[in-house]
Image (cartoon, rainbow, N blue to C red; front, side, top):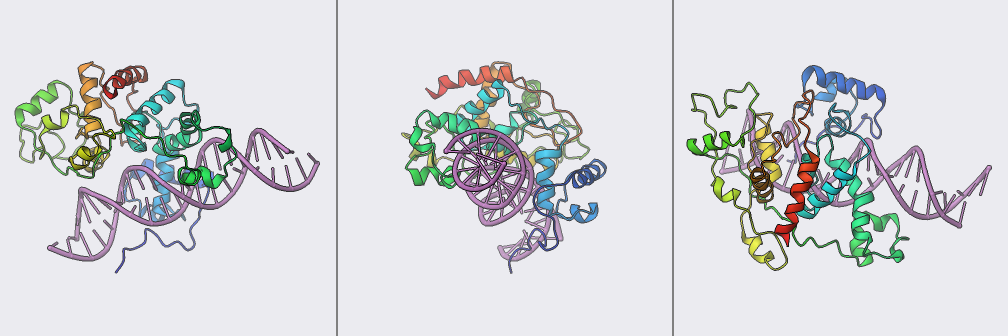
Length: 300
DNA sequence: AATCTTTGCAACCGCAAGACA
DNA sequence: ATGTCTTGCGGTTGCAAAGAT
């Protein structure tokens, strides 16, 4: 018995969204909030797949979305983050307030990727077809994807819960490493006097916070044997119950966080709030860029 | 001006993984 | 323990607009 398809495809609108559909979706989410995407179209009266609604909202309709005009600072940041993280678009987007993973991915594919690779690719490739341009470019033209000497490959080991000793918890709170807990869930606040429901964390936070050896060709094999915590997933885990994300850090994230903390430049809200109607704290791009400049030193 | 080609971006798809029953 | 649901991610596709011929 296979899984139920996300929606019945028949009779659903596809392709570009109309202004009317946008308005319906926006109004619905303003009233009822995000989530329950599967049932949303029916409840909102949209002839769309829930997945499509989610995508439309996240990539286009959210009020905190910035569109177009990616600044030089942002561009620089994307390049550096891509160098560091590879195609982890959601992670990259998480560091660029108001930008979506899809937008950054598109921007990379159409501008930066070409520019970064383009220096090495000569005019002979300018004529390559759209097909080659898309994905198969590397294999069909013999152009290898840029090797990322320092791209951190996180492994799919996920943290579902972690246990932080109370003292460490306090230390982290003092260092402002813990998020602002603003949800109503009784289990949300680690600072509750009754710590009974706890703040379970089952890994050694110190271990995670150690700046890791970056992924490189030489230590590929070693790294492949290592257990890393997948950074982008922690947000998923935490966001299910809490709107802010506790930084369960992948090594790359940990490294970023660590250094940012050392430099006292860590943005307080480094992930976009999941509450679309709460404006994000602006991330100081200049600061982050300067941090990433120092990042180059680790890589080399 | 007409046609063809390329580009950019929104949207779609399949998959993975945690949550939940 | 198992199967299904829900959500999120990254890769890919489709199409309109822009540019070239």
